[in-house]
Length: 269
Image (cartoon, rainbow, N blue to C red; front, top):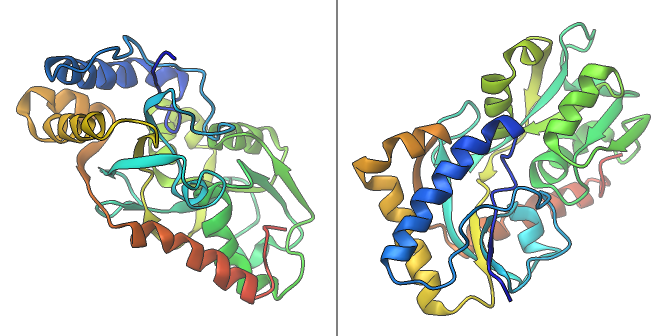
């Protein structure tokens, strides 16, 4: 089995150099620590929501909600990143409800009957948090005329600009990178609301990773966040720190799920 490394959550094509620089720095620290078989390069084709987190995963980043549901028991969290981006506060993030700039929609109350662009049915920022935001408004019924699955937040934004849908909930960190790298496109949309906050998307390794390797990964990540040599690596990905959060913090994502179900809104619809 060949170990793999990936950063699939914030992976615009324009971001390959900064993601590669992050892994080059982290890999160097792991090699210095004596880890064998450290992947030389990131895998850039791993989807944001893969089929599973298999034993080959040495390092990746995976949305917190599927870690508590479809990926339960498959991964070990290595730490939660802190980003300098609107919508983030320390190790937390949320999502923005985004509409085309020319849309007549003013706020969430105007969304009834619109078309919702959904990145993934197991996404925290695209489904779980928006579901909780919209549950009271839906009143136990259907809110949208259509829910269109896109496969990713950047795809949702692209399709929003093409007129394939009317609104999308976009992870605030994705949105920050999208504005940085695609300012002309970003000028064509606007924010009408935001979701509750939740713990940010953690870095992970497979549950099969040996404890000593897990500790080496955690140590290397902390060095990367606090050693002055890596300031440019951190700033390239808007990172200020990586912290440990208790398991209960991520289990709290299931409270949003439960509350939405109790309000008669079990899925975004």
